[in-house]
Length: 211
Image (cartoon, rainbow, N blue to C red; front, side, top):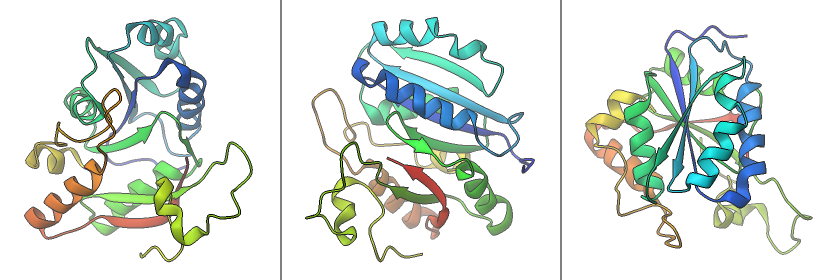
């Protein structure tokens, strides 16, 4: 178990009530991380769904004797980018990690990401995304085309708070919002980061998430 030098905040945004069970699985995987939990917090942002917000509160997630969890509600649906930006404002960590409500983290996911900051002076780091098939893997989809489903594709080459503040966070006009599906907000933010700091994202294939 690694003792993290800097506090870490994981921002998890959720919106759809039908994803509640996936959300619980996501939080459980974060609670089971191999790193020291004393400096770790999860900031859950519920985007304009009060029923889901109240269901999460009734689950006792904030009182669980594991990772500290903070649950906040957007009174209206602001979209993924604005929800992430709000999570950044609420977070106390020097390192910020973003997580989806339908993903499952490998137990060493966070430890591997934190190592990039502590040993390689990273300003941003990311890991490998492996598909978690609900049904059988389709035969017609080779791994070279996994980028179509948001996973790490075959041949793929090798977030701190201050960096995100300097970039003014995510573009509010981008990111999933209700039925709007304009994505690519992470890529756009990374492009601005590279232009401003002349440093890119360190990719660590050992930091694994199943999505």
